[in-house]
Length: 139
Length: 194
Image (cartoon, rainbow over the protein chains, first blue to last red):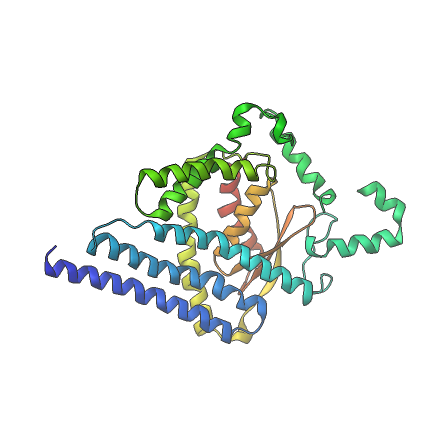
């Protein structure tokens, strides 16, 4: 491959790395700036996806063009990241609901007569104490 | 817990009444192919994943991949006896492209909010999204999509599986956001999963 072509590719790689790094930085900065746990959760679960994605695209371009072999491990990293990020966010949110939130005052009611699943075990025991026979029939 | 999910399970078996038995059977009573290849798609995905992890094609690697692709579904099949059904793989690809596009937009929006909005001016709150989806796989996909896209994190499911609790970073119009989630994502997921 001739020299000027290489330079354009390197500029392209650098661009993707910088964009990725900026998004990772903003996501981490959100952890400091945002006021409470639930809004802090938004930073890492999203801003980081594009940040890591940018670096991975740069890596694919690098191996694909400059070293001349197709590298698909980056796609796998993206794939695993997309699968694991929502699950982690969900766990942290559940832990927050258990420890900090009050289902009656903080959360909107769900449709139907069952509560949110995080709190429903607690509610079921309370109802059972009140009227055990009725509860048997419902379940 | 399981008792509370009863209504959604009933709906599901009604909607797939024509499909072959989705009953929970012990491993020993299944047919030959079902016993040795309980999840053909999972096997294919595992082999592809293994080859991608190796990052180079060798015959030995392929043999190990095939062995893993056969053994792992057999050992785990008692944990998920049903085969998740996908009605339309092509629509799934289209949905994936929309989600990737939205993830990029979401990143830019959240980055803007973090950098240029004062924290006490963020209108962050919980909203409840009523669901039309009933199958666990479809709800899982919708939950993941909501968490990855603009300013929303899916946090909890109601005990009967019919409502999703979503936390929003900055929301002006709740009804518009619920409508967007339902029309942009849920409607498409509904065409992918039965």
